[in-house]
Image (tube, rainbow, N blue to C red; front, side, top):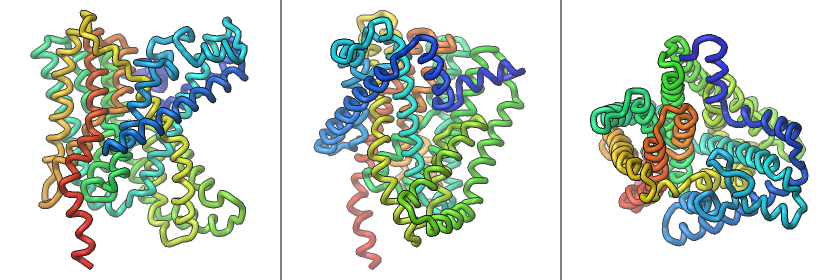
Length: 474
């Protein structure tokens, strides 16, 4: 797979966190194609206006309907994205400056020169990508803060079992089905199977927090399993991407990924006590504004960087940073941090969810296009395997009599941003046919939009009982 220096560079290009891959293109594009900096800022500002309106309108509407607001943010993104209004679109979807309504507004109202439109569009898109990725970093840091290491460790074995089954079952069923039923060759079939293994920890954790289920036994199992699933997904994606390019796997690199991920997460948790004590000590010494939130975000961003540097995902570093700074409620600095991180999250996290929606191209649902017809048939198979495989993993939980196993399985269903990474890498590799590419995108769309309302439904029956427990025990 990743043999020699060239292979290492390929890995970096594909898997390093988008922030690291976007900074240089921003600067290079601005220099080489003479994008207008003022127009880039103006375009980003207008894009954020559209994103925040879509986020709030969608969130409020879906909350009124009784669904998690995060689903409304995703739908709001679809409305302003490539599928409808073309307000916030990205080059990776095949769009250019002529398709962007915001670029047209800049040309008609702000004096954007036509010859600078494309360069401005490219740089503006890259800035939005960076903001979206910062949003998911803040989200995972906040989720880590709200989680409890002791609770996660208590369900650690359960989470490992759920994650292992949730990766193995869809991968084997998807790969075998593509080869036996649809007669797809080995590499694209393996790629399709690999895409089925993903789980969006960002979307699931946000929904669990919104319905007050994050710190339940089920929520902790889901969260732990999603983290393990994410690590497994990175390893599988590395292996499959190398297969698509070279046809061979570098076992040493795969072992490196497994070891580095394990050492990073376990090491961060073991150092949690040191981080807590140090954070409280310096926080109490600081007297200026931001004494809690600035050091905390510094730790989160630094650990995100470490995750990126060792070829993992930055979001795992952010989550680990939140975990090591848990149990701070007893200190004034800890309580201050929890209060201050919420408004930051409220401002930047919606950018991530709306952006995921803007990239959802509903045009792949059009059966009038011949390639889409074949893709729709394959998509039905992938969607069934994607849902059944993850739901089934919830029933692998053992030794816990009263746990809601169906809720655990449903919590592992959404593919979200992780599934989109698989789809984009597969498309870029050239290993996927147009029909299979469409099918994987459809699978990601359906599982992402289906899981949030299903989570509320499967938790709904037990909600009243959960609220009555404190009264009974008190």
